[in-house]
Length: 204
Image 1 (cartoon, one colour):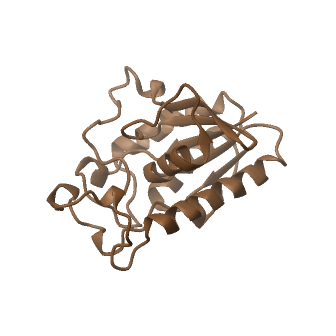
Image 2: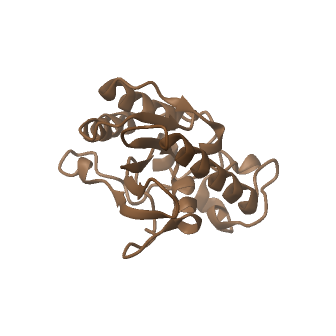
Image 3: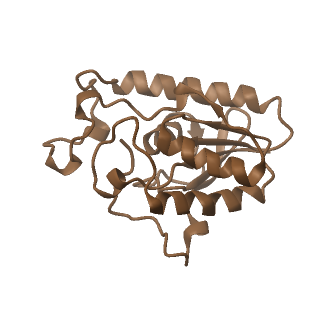
């Protein structure tokens, strides 16, 4: 049985390529994307949902909750990286790549602190998975999933994608060392008019 990582659906600020405040909700397209991924996940008969409680991830988790009957469990370990005073800034107006900055933005989180938190989140999830009889769903954020792929998951024949798509599914083995089984799959959006916008901001 597996752990299934899901990025939240699209937000208006994703589409506008803006680094998001913590309270950013899903856009109408994102809500529709969440319903599509929820339908796909329901067929897998998951045993639990663990999610970031930032609104965009929590609303995605709630869609999965409605389709599965499971009550999501929240943890701040799965929050997106805190970009502090950069939140609300259009990404393309910055003179640097905020997604890859090593130091902490003012009132934000350094890369090292963020990666340590993500490692702790996956360990917490793996511990929870041990008590389950079916897949564990993790609903989180683009940079969180990317950090897991970079630091905590054996990719094998897979590679780290340039971007993590909205409601993309990444499946990993339940026990450490975690191995990638599926990476960044959005086939549930194909042909729906809700396909992932490759120009939107993947993270932040």
